[in-house]
Amino acid sequence: MKKSLSVLIISLLSAALLTGCSSGASKEKASEGAKVTIRLAEAHPADYPTTLGDKKFAELVKEATKGRINVEVYPGGTLGDENSAVSQVQTGGTVDMTRVSSATLTSFNSQMGLFALPYLFTDSSQEWAFLNSDKGQKLLKDLQTSNMMGLAYYESGARSFYSSKPLTKLSDLKGQKIRVQQSAITLEMVTALGANPIVMPYGDVFGALQTGTIDAAENNAPSFESANHYTVAKNYLLDGHQRVPEVLLMNLAMWNKFSPADQKIIQDAATASVATEKEEWAKYEEKSNAKIKASGVTITPVDNVAEWQEAVKPVIEKNGAQFKDLIDYIHTLK
Image (cartoon, rainbow, N blue to C red):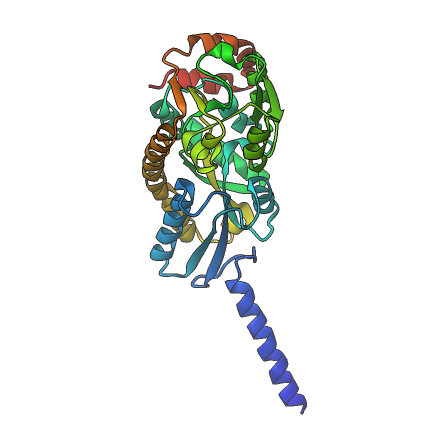
């Protein structure tokens, strides 16, 4: 009887150990050959460019490890919104990875606030020249001080203003109530442009535009279209005031559990997935712009942002000092 009980106890302990090695929640060092599941939270829908980038990343990791490391992508905010997901990644909760806006990471690394500065980049080429540079990559590495491993940047286009009221020039913004993200710099920027910023959850914007609680909001074309905001805001002014990249990141303890060889596989997969995400972004952006235009939205390009830059100059002077070296470097890029 005692012998049978001992065998049972040993069997149960062995099973528990094996289960622990295969769990994505375990942050202990993974032994070579152990199967690991990584849970990746994505706030956007399944067909959104960032989600497709996530899925390409997962595919490449699975392929390189022959299924030993499995990345499960959960789109549509099923594991929580961006703030919730990044908090779980940072604290080592049930979410191991996520894709979030760099704006969400400002509270973890103040240098990420650089991207909130208005009219920082002249175009996408200059932005990516910076993101791919040593200085841009250092911003990702510095997230390690907050227990997160930044793996790659994803494209997110340029943010512009859209409104239910006439909006074809800078003076039209005066007095308009504009929804913004929780960002001190963005609040100051909208105020400097003559409007009234209102912080509001993204999910509340559509209803607020319908009821007149707000007059306007600001975002890129795919978000403007996919959230159906274009059906209630028929004026889109393409000033491109911000280019705020997305970031793919992992819990640092999870990262450290992998061997150097596996870390290289994961990093290489993340880097390679960027091309897919950027390609999907270009296609999605073209489709969104066509749909917005066909719906009767008045789209007004801003060919010369000098007037806009002059209006927000006090904002840059106040907030730019902490980013001076980075700003000076960006100005050297084409």
